[in-house]
Image (cartoon, rainbow, N blue to C red; front, side, top):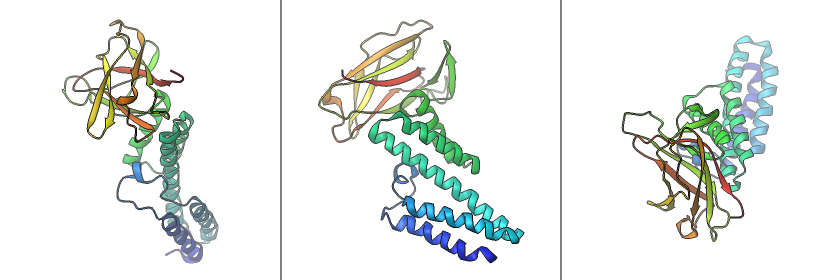
Amino acid sequence: MFGPAAPTMTEFYAQVETAVRKTGRSYSDNPRTQAAGLYDRVSLDRAISALERAEKTARSDEAVARRVAEVVRTFRYGCWMIEGFEQSAKMHVTGDLACMEAAQAAGQKALSYCKVSEAVEFVKRWTTGAQLGVLNDGFGKEETKGGRRCWNSDETGLGDNVRGWASFTVMASDRSKPLVVEMDVWGESDLSGIVINTRKNVWTPVRAQQRLSRKSQWDTLQFRIPPESLDHDRVAQHLGLGGADSQIWVAAIRVLKGQ
């Protein structure tokens, strides 16, 4: 199948297999939670090197060159998506927004090789995360209100009485202290409080310390979450807002330090 490039392609596939075997990690079907840490980076780099050599060797045979080129395309897509998942996982641990920006950049590079529909959705989340300031899920398409870029918690739109729920993740390195989350919210939004996943299947409501203006302007709300409402088993805290047809526009979310 690979003609003169067969030896280097054999090396390539061997390195791909080694990349998974070496870590000893298992994988079922959830790249979001399982891709990070699944592959040995050194083995992947060796696989890429073998592919590059195979490309050069295959130039003498047009049919073989096309086959190798297709493997290169899909593999480079995969490698960049792996990098995206790795950076996203790092964001969960460190809370460093630069990791989300790196995940977004890696995802865009992956899509330049192959536009897999599921990957498009992952990259969309990373992009929104980099812009909104937190890893998030469930927000609608980017909009503009009051001159600012924002996202609505109702992903499916007004009038269907479904969705309206969005969630996001922030970091709480010291769970013995209150966590203060600040959000820039459009003044006409349907928001008075958020909920935090205190433990499995338990969501604790937290009311804002300020009221929305109910005017066409951007307001800043603070939510002071006491230590007893935090999930003490993990740094990453999962929060949610909205529900049903509620319309909530958010431009930025951040954690206040030293509160």
